[in-house]
Image (cartoon, rainbow, N blue to C red; front, side):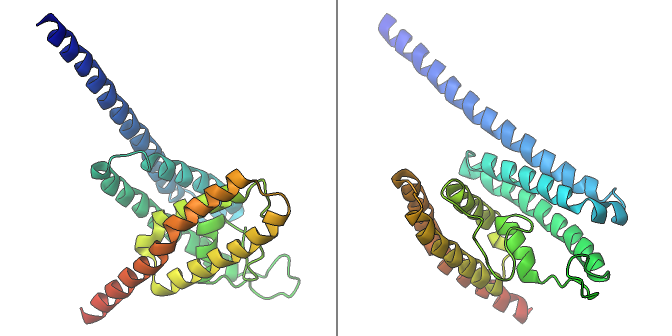
Length: 233
């Protein structure tokens, strides 16, 4: 009898420890998501002129908070993840609205660097590239020369996290563009492999690719269904 009591006591302690761990992960995710929401909401309090003048820093701060929130999401139970993901998606949508406003304002002014006197054109595809790789990292030429053996795993990982965080809002064109960008990154990996990419990093990249491959196909099919449904309404 005494042994059974001791076993039950030990089991209870382990169970309590597991519950405590889950609660801490939920608290951390809630905290990071709240920080993301507060940051995006605070941008609405900043004047259009200040946002435009400090956009590079704003974008960098946002990307850091968004990545932090998405990282915390991965440790949540499935029952909590869906609701938390919706909050992150809502903040992403708000941020995109602000970003479009800033870019639209920039388009009305002469390009500072081009020297042509013509407005700088920013397409929806550029917005997608910024979301997947970070503001200003990839242009229309899809040049991945900045990716090397030291940062390539992080680039793949960040792409995967950004893709998962935003895929529910993608159109079929967005999915096609996202897949094209991934293929361009893959082509860069072939070069980086010859420059000393480690076997361990290669395996990490392979794991990410295995998870992404079916997502490209099925997520695009889902987007087509949504668009067809919207068209009927």
